[in-house]
Image 1 (cartoon, rainbow, N blue to C red):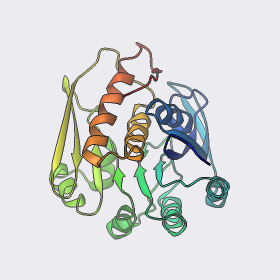
Image 2 (cartoon, rainbow, N blue to C red):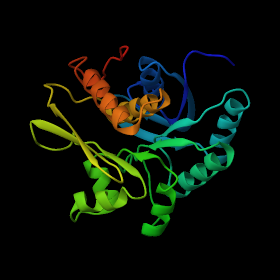
Image 3 (tube, rainbow, N blue to C red):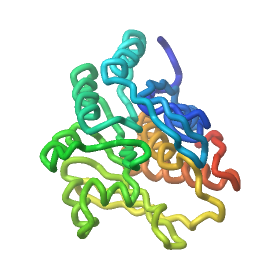
Length: 251
């Protein structure tokens, strides 16, 4: 179907407050000039400051949702958000590579216990094999430590960047200046922003990873896409004094 906009697909949880998950991703896609599709990986009971429970969507139902879209639209750029387990992630990534021609996948590893993501003790080899099929992963600092360990995180991420690009979100630091880092196989890029008063936002990690996906869909290389996604996210963080941010067009 003809369109002047590229396509991007979010595979993520449904958040009734629309601050995070698939609805926030689609807002972000649209504000970045990309037509957004959404596939639900989980139903959640939450608002901007409470998370009550989650009901997971089975992998076959996730795939069925994607299949309907692929019968009509050519989709190559995808963001994966809230997902049930390492096993589901592995099956989903495998399916996407079998079904699509060279998919560009951005994975936002939401690992909080309330969300439920569990690696099932797959070990480093299983993780690396999955990450080799992902274009970029976007952990925050606690998620990076959970994924890759607590010792010398910078060295570990530099080593892991041989397999997957890593955008490390620095908002969980205590510094006044927030430092985000993009690790690629040949360079580490730094993006620095002043901490914004009342800048904490529900779903900010989702917004960053969705903006990165959108910027890649627009044809930008990864460093440019990361810089633009960083700028878009800081625009979002500064948009209100509440936990729910506003989206506006980004050029």
